[in-house]
View 1 (cartoon, rainbow, N blue to C red):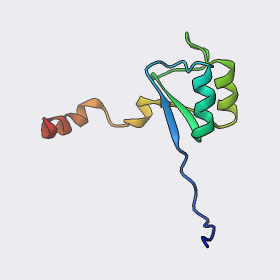
View 2 (tube, rainbow, N blue to C red):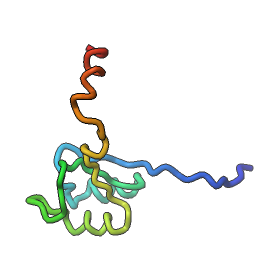
View 3 (tube, one colour):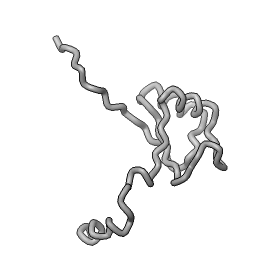
View 4 (spheres, helix red, strand yellow):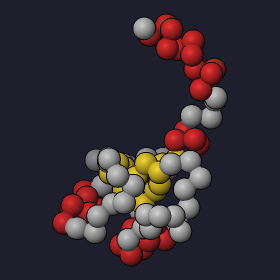
Length: 91
């Protein structure tokens, strides 16, 4: 019999793509049943009062910790110029 551990569970996230605005639809309801959280790629300096506001469903999920915006400027902290060596090695 397996014993419980004190390990933190890593959330399984589904990433909605290609738009910022996740539709309030059947897709959203099915996704939240099978995944721990939903994510969407948002541009640098994106705020909730932008041209494309979050739907009420996404606002609710965000308040509950079930929606996470992915900002690419926070993922890639190094400037683009410092990654040029990687491009040369992989080309």
